[in-house]
Image (cartoon, protein in one colour):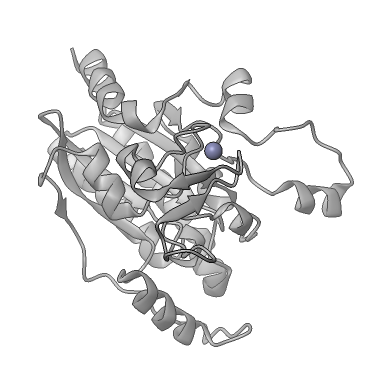
Length: 281
Ligand SMILES: [Zn+2]
C-alpha cells in the first residue's frame, strides 16, 4: 500500500523545460529525444519518436476518450477531510489544500456520464497529479457511486486508473476500506449483468491495482504502463526477491494473462466502442 514508487515516471508535458522558451520543447524520458511539445500534444501526449505515453490529466483524458462535450461530471462536491488529524512532513489538511490549488481538483477522482461514439457510458478516472492518484475516502466513494449509477442505468462502466500511490496512507484504515467498498459495488454491478472495462495507465500500483483496476471484465492497458502492487525496490527490501526485467509493465502482464489487450492511446475510443458493441449484441 501507499508506495510512492512511481514519481520518477511522472514526466509531464506540462513541466517547464530548462533553458529555451519555457514549455516549447520537452524531453522524452524513454528515448531522450527532444520533441516539440505541440507535436506531442497533437499525438494525444505521446512521444512522436518512440511512442512513449506521457501522463495525461483527467480533463484531457475525458476529451480524448469521450465524444465532444458529452461529459457530465457527478458528485463534484464530495471533498476530503482529515478525520485522523494525520501529519507526516506536513499536516494532511495542508497537503490537501496544496494539492487542490495545484490541480484545481478537490481530490484525485473524476466520475460522471458521457458518450463514446454515441454509446452512453459511466466513466471514472483517477488522476496521478493529485497525491499520485492515491485512493482515499473520496476516490473510493466517487468510484463506488459511479458503479452504483452504472448499475441503476444499465450503462457500461469504464474506469481509467492512473494511481502511483495505491491506498492513501494519510487516511489509514479509512483508505484501505475503499478497496473493499469499490470491489463490493463492482460485484453488485457484475451480478446485475454490467460490463466493466478497466483501462490501466502509467502508473497503476498498490491498493488500486489490488482492487478495482484488476477486476475488469475486460482489462486494457496503455503501452509501457507500470502496473503492479509493490514496486521492485519495496519487494527487494521486504523479501529479497530479484524480479525479472520489466515484470510490472503492460507487456509483461499481457504475456501472463493479466491484461487482455494493449491499446495505443489514439485507438482507445474506437476500441472501447467496439468492445461495448461486441458485448452488448
Ligand atoms: Zn520518446
